Amino acid sequence: MDKDINIKVKVWRQNGPNEKGHFETYALEKISQGSSFLEMLDILNEQLINEGKEPVVFDHDCREGICGMCSLYINGHPHGPDTGITTCQLHMRRFNDGDTITVEPWRSAGFPIIKDLMVDRTAFDKIIQAGGYISVNTGGIPDANAIPIPRDDAEMAMDAAACIGCGACVAACKNGSAMLFVSAKVSQFALLPQGRVEAARRAKSMVAKMDELGFGNCTNTGACEVECPKNISISNIARLNREFLKAKFRD
Image (cartoon, rainbow, N blue to C red; front, side, top):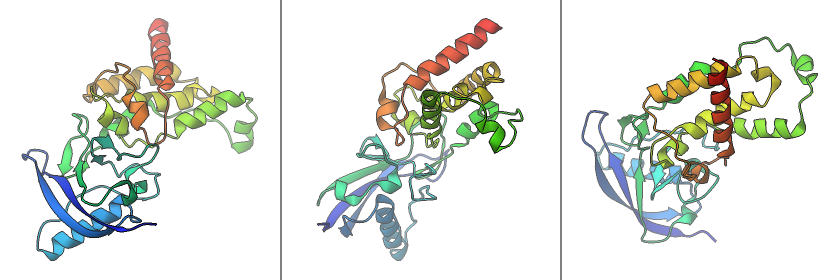
């Protein structure tokens, strides 16, 4: 049965990308363990507003684990201590009475801080714009379904397409690499015949854009896979490497 707990929240505060940040600690009482982590932050902000203080800025949207915007680094883990979930799906029952919870923004050169816990993740949008799409006419739904695709390939493509682009992989990686994200977006097309037309250009363009935007190199530590809320497999990174090498050999 859920109970009320008293906690302390140690939050990163930073007024802007060019300002020096610092931690501030706030005490919260009678927080229901049945509430979500974001509901706890809502309560914190209501308390700060009532005290005449600046509320904590954090990103969120759907609160259903779909959009990936709730990008928070909680007690040393992207999206918190639970596996296979986003921050909005994390509940306070994962914490105990008297706990101090440390909350930080994503730490990456590719994700500059906007304010407090909110970061600019438009770098991922730029990577997608570089090649994460198909521009050929695939026809209508009946035409697309008429193309025979092995079940295993279809399942792997759907698993890769489950990536929500939250950036947890980058935050978890000691190198700040975006390889898991890029490989998932390449794999979802590489496994399907509709994506083969532009396969060579896609792999080269997306990897080049990733490097240009300041993301680090992959050294296969596997931290990205462990922390991914959608359990994207690092086998996609191997597929991206194959796609990239094939494109280079073709050149």
